[in-house]
Structures are given as C-alpha cells and as structure tokens.
Amino acid sequence: MSSKVVEKEKKTRARARIRVKKSNDVIAKILDVAFPVGDIQLDHSIEVRSVYHLYEMMKRGVIYIDPDLQRGYVWDDVKASLFIDSLYRGYPVHMILLARLGKDRYTVIDGVQRLVTIRRFFDNELRILKVSVIHPDIRGRSFSSLKHDIREKFVTSISMPVCFINLGNLDEKAISVITDMLRRVNISEQKMTTMQVIFCTFKTPSIQLIKRMSEYENYRKLLKFTESEIKAMYDKVLLMNLAISVHSGKVVYLQGYCFRSSMPYFSKFILENDEKKLRDVEQWIKDIIDTCIELGLERKHFTTSYYGLSRAMREVVSKWIFTAITVALFRLLREHDREEVIKRREELVRAIEDYFRNIDKTLYVHVLRASSIDHIAKIVDGLYMRLESVFKS
Image (cartoon, rainbow, N blue to C red; front, side, top):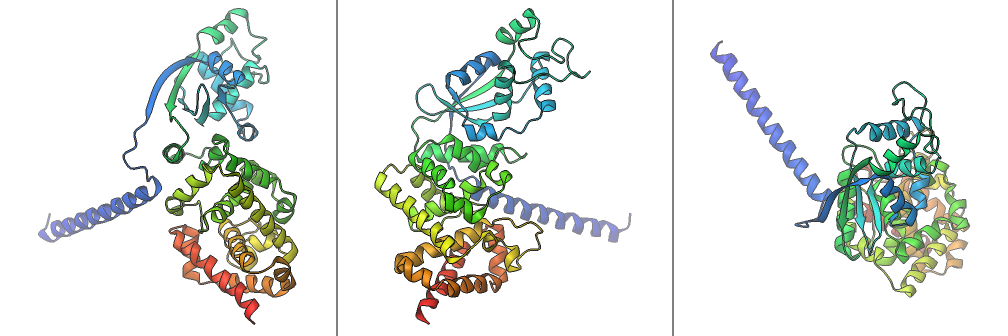
C-alpha cells in the first residue's frame, strides 16, 4: 500500500473521530436538557408477584388505573392473547413499574396495557384467540371456561416481575422523578406519552381543574377535537400550557427542550393547594376561551396550515400557536376590559392573522424544534405587542 493511500486513510479516520466526538457532545447536551434530575436515586424493590394478586390489587383499588388510561387501551385481541399465552408458557415478559404515592396506593408508570389485559382476562372480557400459535390448554377459551387445574395455575402459580418504587410524599422531587422515568421509559419505543401518564398519576386539585376545563362547552366548541385527539389527551395538554402560564405569569411550554425551563412552574402548579388561586386560574381560562369565541376565532386559527406555515392536508391544532394566542390574549385582557376587546374583534383577528403569516422564519424553525422557551416567549411578546397596537391606532 502506497504512502499516499496510508496518509489518506489516517486523515479519513481522524475526521471520523472528530465527527463522533461532536456527535457525542451534542447527545450529552440533549440528555442534560431532557433529563435534569441531578443526583436523585430511587428507593425501589423488584418482586415477583402472581398475576392474580395483581388482579386483586386492581380490583381493590390498590393499583389505580385512571379511567382515561383505560379508555386509551389499544391492544387488540391478538396482542392480548399472545401476552396471556406468554404468561402461561412461563416466557419472560416486561416488568410492570408501579410508583407508591401514599399508603397502600400505587400508580402505574409503565404497564397499563399488560395490567388491563390481565384484568380483562380474569373478568372474562377476553377470549383467547383460537389459533395454532396459542397453547392448546388456553386456546379459544375465556378464564371461566378453562379446565379447573388450568384456572388454579393462573390463580396460584403464574407470575411476573414488578418494580415497586417508593416516592414518599408528592413534592417537586417526586414530580421530577416520575417525569424523568416516563421520558426514559418512552425513549426507545412509542408508549403512553409523558403528559398522558402525568394527568392520570397526579390527583391534585390543579389536575382536576384541567380535566374540568377540558369539558368546558366553549373550549370544545372552539377547537372541535377529534376522537383520537381526546383519546391522546391532546385537549388537556393544550390547557396545561395555558393554565401554568396564567398561574405563574410566565410563558410555559411543556414540549421538547422547553420542558426543563418550564419544570419549576409545572411542579408549583401541580402542587398548588390554594383554592382561591386555582379558582382565579379557572376563571381566567374561561374568560380567554370565551373571548376567542366572541372574537370569531375557530379551530383553523390555531393551525399552521391556515397561515401557510405548513402544507398539512389535515388541520392539526398547533400547541405553540394555541399557547401564543391564548397567553397573548391573557395579557391583553389584564390591560383592557373584555367588552373593549370584543368591540375591536375584526382588527384583532386581522392582527393575529397578519402576525403569523409574516412570522420570522428563523424564529419559526426554532419554535418547531422547541429548542428554547425564549423563542416561544418572543412569539408571545410579538403577538401581544401587535394586538396592543390595535388599541393605540
């Protein structure tokens, strides 16, 4: 091999090492933003529990699965049958993650589909598929139609691993740990979203407020959510950004890299117990939504396609546009009487449309990446100033 070829190979390898180093540096920065938990360590134990014992824990409410999560059950009978068959055959299955919140009460961090399948099976809501891949002992049968000795085996002998996590009291540390665990659980495959499980894990007054407001008639009328959006709790995620922004007085956006800077405000809102403050937040949300209706805003005004920012065939409500419009209106309503705002409905709607149609493209790209809360804040500030200029003209 000639010296020129050897030299060329050395340079190629050197460039490759530089690329790998840069890539690792970028990944390290991303992880630092995505998982900001410091030196927290968990108190947990891993145990093997019989599936029937898990079923009894669900029936007694010791393992709590929120109805919203149960409605989000997506396994078909094929996946459910194969899971029960795997348990019967003694195959290894993924561990259930349960977090202890309070005395003798656990919430599900990971494993909703498996637990609901177990409950369906013992409640005779699931009939195992009659196909050759299923073990003959359970093929085509429900639990009650199994032979006596097979039923006894499911009740006494069949088990699976469970991780019990002790979080103690619900505080900022517990919220941080749960959020971090959810993001790590979901990092390699599509499971329940972090926000979905958060809504079903925390039973605080603030979460109940979000759930109530998601049923508010004018909110439904304004955004006309599809069944799939409601199932994914998209309606509640949008309200969460608005509610925390109102509660904190800061622009909050629980998305991408913005999650870290929004986390302190998120935790304070989740833990808020002051009834007056929560009533104020609820009233502000109603006022903002009612104002949107009276201004003549519709679902299309909260989509990127309406402003020519995307070529999406289906109008999808944009989280950042909804946050920008509603938080800007919140600021406007603090400065002007609602009647005064409604009188200028045509000018204000034109201002909103003009602002988004002429938005700075570089800023728009940063917002799509959710790379910094500052970019969302700039859009809110810009829109608010544009709306405020209507009152000065």
